[in-house]
Image (cartoon, rainbow, N blue to C red):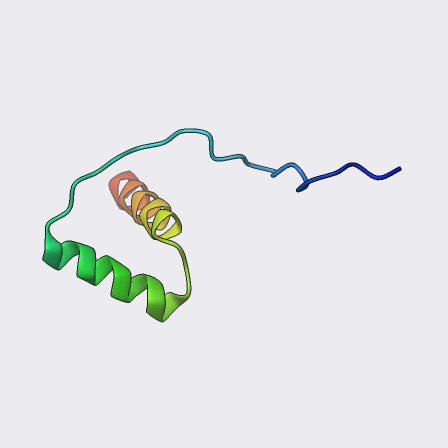
Length: 57
């Protein structure tokens, strides 16, 4: 019998953060996410990786 429910994720996202954005920044984030067909969380994760890669240079 197969297991019920969604399969386990390879890299589960268990940490949660709450941030406050001004309206202009929120609108820019939403536009970016729609254009790139990604979630807000994924856009923020990409932004963090971009900042970290720039710091290493």
